[in-house]
Length: 349
Image 1 (cartoon, helix red, strand yellow):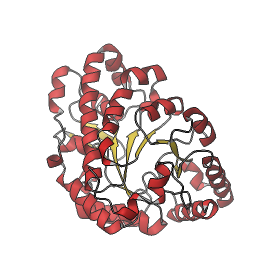
Image 2 (cartoon, rainbow, N blue to C red):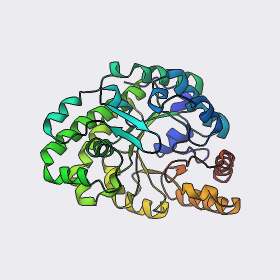
Image 3 (spheres, one colour):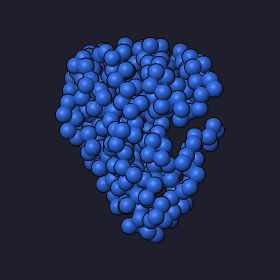
Image 4 (spheres, rainbow, N blue to C red):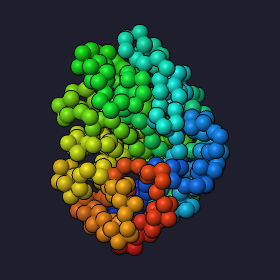
């Protein structure tokens, strides 16, 4: 089934790069560009809780469009949060300022899985509405949908919130692998369905975020995680949308993350694109990977780093310029605009 994305978006440089096809210039967008650093985002969000803002289609549309207007980036990233589908199916959680997602009743036993019902489009009508509104506004600029990967969602649910060491998560994963697999299978359905809702409504590409999976060694990723991420990505296999897979601290996992079903493997700032391409081979496009902290350096430092990343990206069959993680909240938005312009300038074919 094709998506409702306009034909110009489906043939944009972003989509073409993701498919390892020739482009007119290296496409660029920034993870967490929707919100974070923009004063217009802070103004429109004032007094509105994070999760509520993700469930109001008009607000989602405006926030998603803001960085496209300001920076001239080559894609919009859907404004949402990885825990939105969990909230939609009735999980008691909230996003606490300065902390992150906090789960009222963590999952520790088999009976706790009963709270994780399958996600259907009927759970998230506001997502479908917002994507359709955005696609109509964006025209030829592609929209990227996204979801959290099963491991990261599982960690939040098992730990009860963010964790530095993931001790409860790893204890469950190794101590009760049957429960772990059952948990991740449910989360794979939820994440995959969330991706599919966005793609069917018109998103031109999707990205699966695995924020915490870099805490695992390769053997554990292969044994406990890869097939569940693969199941989430496979949910859009028939929709003709490129799939991006990104994780933090995942230099040792890049090939396995690609083999989970990605067209594009996101590379964080800890690994050079040259090394990432060597590890991946020529079967994948790459995305990344300017260190977000470098955006606070003098412009000559930023310019040299951007030029270097664009040059490294030429070694890959497809390259999407991005940061090696998300936009930091207090970065100067004008720097992001200059980076976008520079990437376009130095990569023009």
